[in-house]
Image (cartoon, rainbow, N blue to C red):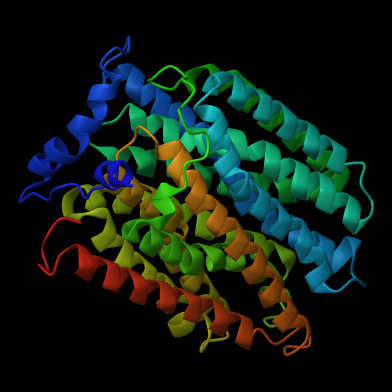
Length: 436
């Protein structure tokens, strides 16, 4: 126990960002001194770019699922309950994150490049299999479970391996990586809608499956861990879950990242059911979330490097709650929906990357894939529960057309997350302007 406490001891703070980087990051990087490439060099940023593409075809595709959700609810499975159809997306998002802990364990033993390529190949196959699925349960297995499990490999490795290569601008590196999900969500949403309208849902699955397979497998050789795989003395090390910092970060992720997918799923049907607009506006709102998320992630990364990831996470989570409770809820109009989508895109879509940045500053990067996998497992359980509860509210309390309580529920979860983060920040330091 003493060794675990020593290993997880808090890193010292500093008065300036450069001092903070030297004290926190340098000792952790000494483990990688034997790497053939230096940190922060051209190869390091090439790994970051590869991680960006992997995030694009994994998390980005998941963020674009709202287009499929809209098509399934309104057209293909029009007589099925919304909650039944939502199992496709919720299982997909759950498996994408739930498998993170297994990816973290395997990354300590096997070559991350091979793992990434295998996952990318299987996720392409899953979308192709989904093209032949005609029942909801079949899509839950293919587009949901199989895709989510396979995509977890290039996704988790794509966002954590680059952290082993970047020392001085870790927040910016994570912003670049997660900007890929915004770019991916944007173009995948547009391509999905265009393909469904022109060649049908089945061929849209096949086209996207082949594209994701080609990009994922082709860039997998760059997802190279800086330290060679070594079998750890303990494959399953849960000592970290008893540490108070991990408990706070896990709790904040549970309440903030669970509702993270709700606007992507509900906004496309909201504009049709409540505002009486066409499906194209629904796809446009998903695109707005993803486009604004590109700028939001960049701003979050730069500001986190300057003021601290926990400090910025509090502000971003509070603004995400306001986008739901202060804009979307009281104003039922196209303009309000666009404003809510834009603000949530800037803030809410950035939360997952900011939590990972906070983890890296608290625990370093040598075991970041494994520790982040535990956090993503927490996120997956929350996501499944939140999505199903929200759609059940819509079907029962809202009778399929009243979105009031689903929006309130989403916003209140983000408020709870904000309170948890504020308490966490106070425990780290009572100094208002301290870097945390």
